[in-house]
Length: 409
Ligand SMILES: Cc1ncc(COP(=O)(O)O)c(C=O)c1O
Image (cartoon, rainbow, N blue to C red; front, side, top):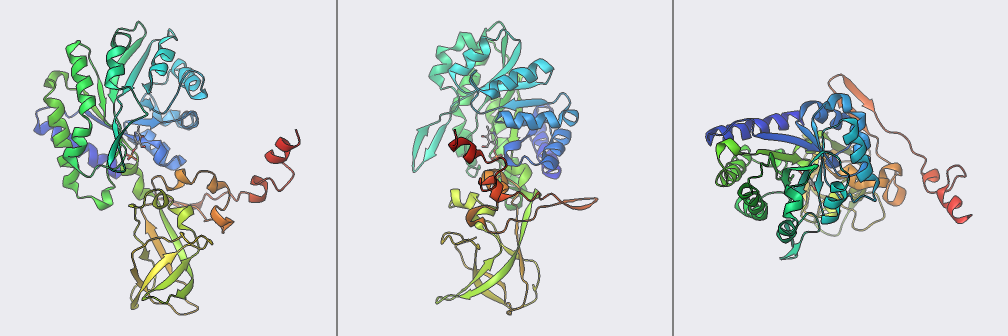
């Protein structure tokens, strides 16, 4: 994580200098939604420039790492109208002295924060167009250009709210650089409106979306930031150039985890390959592949690497026909009946666990055996699996049976 953070910071600083801008005009923070495990968040709080959160629960986590975080900024996304516990938590943490910036997602939120009579820095999210099935859909997050024009005076001349940040996050990982820069057009339009109104905007935040470093050449990041910084530089002068923020989730967290599985059965198919059945489930362990058919994870052998290979497809151990780890045939070492072949799936550190949600408290799909979780640090390996009683979670045992309590009322 920290290696990627340092790489990106240095890369962007070089780009800034090459365009005669101060190297302090870039900050990279960690979007904790990618992986909320303690070791990552505490590291990010210590070593990256700020944290990005999206819920009240995320903020509960931030309070746990407040010593490491110090006065660094916390940027709050997600919906947070006044009725939510998230809104109340933001206000409470602001009052406790945290540097917390809510990024306004709707006109309601703007007026909710505005009616507090509390001096606060805010950001505003600019609605992006979302590509969906070949067409562009309006984004449900943020304010449209029209809404910004309608509420311009409230946004820019409020007696307690101070607008310091413009934000846009475009879903999907950046692959086409010119297209992504163009996606930010509405953000740049709003920035120009602010300059014309003589408003000083401290931060332009372009959200996440940076691709995993393992699969991306270093020059990609240089080229992306060269074009992005050049575009923003056209709108302003070096003196007023805002601080550019990257809220990176995937880019920082992907390489922090990997999965190791064992082949528990080999099954010959009538086709030209064998099934290797693994002691886990693709649905439980790499759920992103189920949500996004374009997402693929490599599978590599851990042992028997000198053996002749055979063509296989790896499946999960659940009864779900769709539970396989890849659709393209791959080559793995041949095995005999009593051999224990282990395979590894690298780069599962971002989103896989958080998308899994409640499955982590139970063994997951088909209730197949849960995976053991180990934390590897410079000082050793420790287990962090807490064996949850799935019978209890599902309401079979008397204590804490939420369903029995509900239906007995
Ligand atoms: C507002 C915002 N910022 C940052 C991120 C992190 O994106 P990524 O993991 O692609 O870097 C997300 C992801 O959904 C997001 O919604």
